[in-house]
Length: 338
Ligand SMILES: *Cc1c(COP(=O)(O)O)cnc(C)c1O
Ligand code: SF4
Image (cartoon, rainbow, N blue to C red; front, side, top):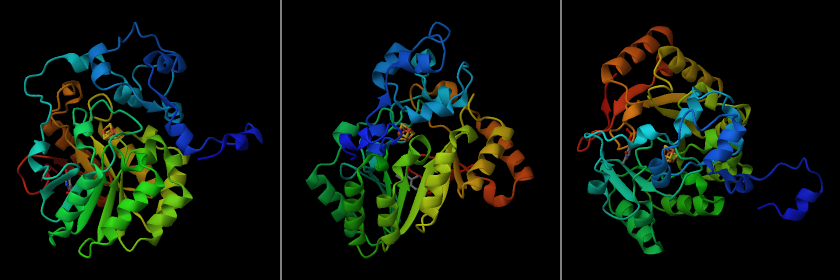
């Protein structure tokens, strides 16, 4: 971490990502003041904000257009009263993840790959998050849990790929990410590590030289799945981060969630695919929303989502059309809808 004395040299010394990560906006009123908005127009959902508080890096707020509640990024961040409307088929754990959780911190749903909830927190709280009710505290692996997770992976030679998810695995320090990589490199049948992160979007400064040289030096294939839902989320800073990753031999993909009022139009989705490709990233999955309690107002009907993807297909090269998927508990992969 940058020592405080260094910042005296000049006020133009940019803050380190660690400082940025410890200076998140969590006060709803502060966010509204920055955006010149009035809470009376769109009251805060108090219960929603208590269960899953507002959280966003100060830098990322610059991606939001001030003065309008219609902004597609703000809609992903603002704890709204709509979250408190009871929708009977929306549940706390729609993916039944607790069924596939043999050791704390590890999900093994699909034969050849497992997912580690490597970090108990994120830099941002996305209102539609399917893990918003996930018991991170109860699932924060202790040292012996980590040993059990690696033992589970080492004992099953069918597992070739490990996904680092969370929370956000890049909310961890480089030292912690490095330790995880080392543990996985030591298991001979693991050939790929996939990092699922929103950091490339909400705090791209996180992608520093220490991290990328570590990734470049690994014997493992490294795949990074970024998470952007709208072209406005991409920035000059994310471009720098993706270029650094690409020059460190990291394969770059993006996943999105289709969200009412955010990106449920073909023009918006096409613009997103083009903006990603301009930064060297290919669209991978477009997820249908999961039926997570508190997120019904984001729902888009499957038939409508399919029509939007058909529009994308008619206007884009095949490699810029994401696969429309949903996770259905008990299936041996995600289910494709287009
Ligand atoms: C989505 C997911 C994966 C990865 O699936 P892919 O189709 O390979 O992207 C692996 N494990 C879990 C638990 C998942 O939810
Ligand atoms: S960054 Fe990912 S895990 Fe974290 S709140 Fe957003 S969608 Fe959920």
